[in-house]
View 1 (spheres, rainbow, N blue to C red):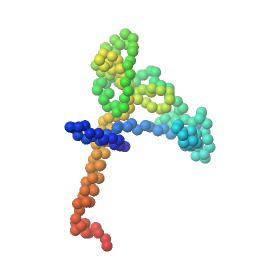
View 2: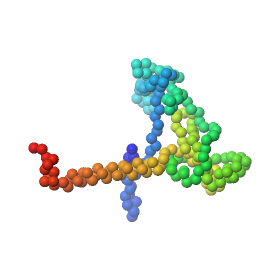
View 3: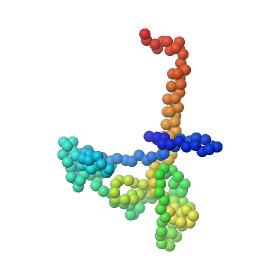
Length: 197
């Protein structure tokens, strides 16, 4: 859900309420080797919290026996991306649909640069990217040329979807406001059939 975090005034223009777009992280179930769901049990509520995983009988499961249920596949770790087989060539304006992104410069050899210039031209290559062996976060990545330099823009989120959710939130807010206004403006004789004494 989108939440207002701040209001600002731009003098001579007006007031604005700020609603940051946050990507909802996918939380995968932790399971044992048989695929039974495990629960996290906090041992010390410090930062970071110290915890263990337990089965439904409250028996501790050793860390090397804890798996992630990754869409039906039991795994403990996914290595970071080092080879991309599945990619698409797309219009580079697709990068603007990311809600959170980071930018990296790319260095390559002359042969790769010539192939990129010939096949990709003024478009972008897009693919799924895992940046780290820690965690289960995946990103949408784009490789393109900006001002003659190869860059990779990687990020998360879907701006089109976020815009629709924001519009719906405003519609819902207006409907609630209208209902309140209607209740405030109702005359007693208009609702006398609803009154029970």
